Length: 178
Image (cartoon, rainbow, N blue to C red; front, side, top):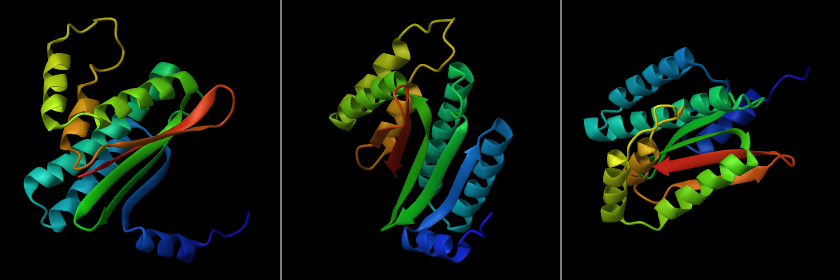
């Protein structure tokens, strides 16, 4: 096995202003540990508490969504997440991705694209509407409030991509700016 180019990786992290990067199987305890490290970093940077909480909340929402999808879908490789937190020009970016079924990813992409067309007032109304919807007790996923909330907190529209892997799966990634 060849030795990885750690210096090259470090240089890429410096160039892209990456503060945190994780790639591998995601578990509840790992989400918590990385979250604690992120929280400590944000506190050390003396970020206003509301901004730090928004960055932390986006990280938690993205990683928990990946974990829940992996458990629900039972799709091989869906539990392997890539998570990146970066900081550039006074803005934090939180991005995460994983393998999904093409149909699931396409439906999510469509929803995110719809949110991108909404202004803050429309997003707030969508959040309130979703909040009032009766919750299906058989549902294994959340009510979708987290996704709308991330769209509301993002300083620009969320960006999502879906890259096909084969006829049934694709790599879905989502990035938000705070």
